[in-house]
Image 1 (spheres, helix red, strand yellow):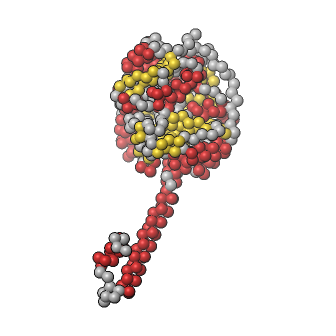
Image 2 (cartoon, rainbow, N blue to C red):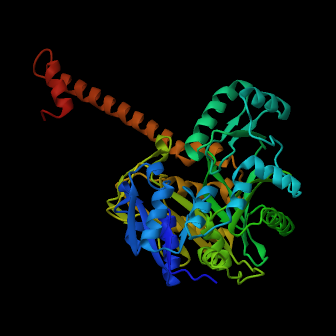
Image 3 (cartoon, rainbow, N blue to C red):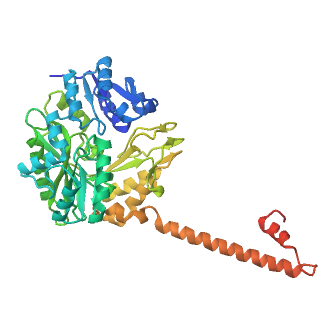
Length: 503
């Protein structure tokens, strides 16, 4: 049985810090890789060793397989943990790691290939008896093929990248005249994100819920699910808030979806941590969406309710050991909010820059997973997420109250963040009620940005201007009446008084 002495974390930011913390607790040494833009990053400071792997662009650093493998050998690492994003779901990288004599902490390359290409995954799930959203069985070969299938399915439809997920290369198309531009945009984004411009098309489900099931498998035949996460609070197909348990699932539906998720994982010979994602329609029918063959951003909420360390389980399974669990008794409710360096009032534009002051929340059952610190400069080359705030409480209402309190304590100075936007989400009646769908943030956009308050502010400013004008006019008439000269003060003298230059 393999025992890791040193693990290279092929990632950056909060997930690199997260993995290193568990390694340290287990007495495993850590190696960081970083780009020239990340020399002062927190994950570099946390590691036992750190090596620069190239310039800021990801393709020249965090995606540069040869350099990462060279560093792993130089540092004497036994294994590589890919985190999420970058190379985490790259089957070629997993194979290269194994060929270099190292252990890849993740599923086998064959499982990644089976689930990584979305249309192949759909075909495999259909054969395994897993329900899928109606749509293409293969990547679309032409715009004409997309138009034909869209008419067959009926608008609206979704164009999706075949080579990856995370909201990249995804476009909703409401009308036939929108398909041309959506086709070009989806293919371009898919190519830049995944190195392939292959896209496919699915029927768009009206007001669905996005619910995912965490699965775990070892090489001894154990494959189980660790319950679900509700991920419907999304903006542009990117998750913003996640929670568990899902407020819409019944115990029976939860068990049914868990069984299907395990069946999906077994169908590809899965190993380690993975997530099977589903869309749940208004009639509570569920459909396979995709499988993410890695640790998810939102894994802390599952850790809160299960009491498990999912990274520790990943390391355990990668070393050939058995999963130490067979049954779960989840407790309470957990919610996570993603904190971004972005400006919600400016179309959520990234807001890189130096953090002058940082105060993160604390108190009972509050957790902040972050990759930044006061004095750190957030670069403009990578995803703008700077941290994840998660809480636990015995019930959902208590968890919402705790999240509100925690967000009220969160202070970041020097850059713009979405913290105020997050606060508004947890005050919104639709979220509080628990029956929100993937269109929630879009529908509530104006209210979450404080649209009503902005209009009231504008009215107040106009009223103030009118009052100031009336006051000045009254003062002018008074001066005219009291003047000892036949015509009163001159125009320039009145103007000077109004501007305060004369008193």
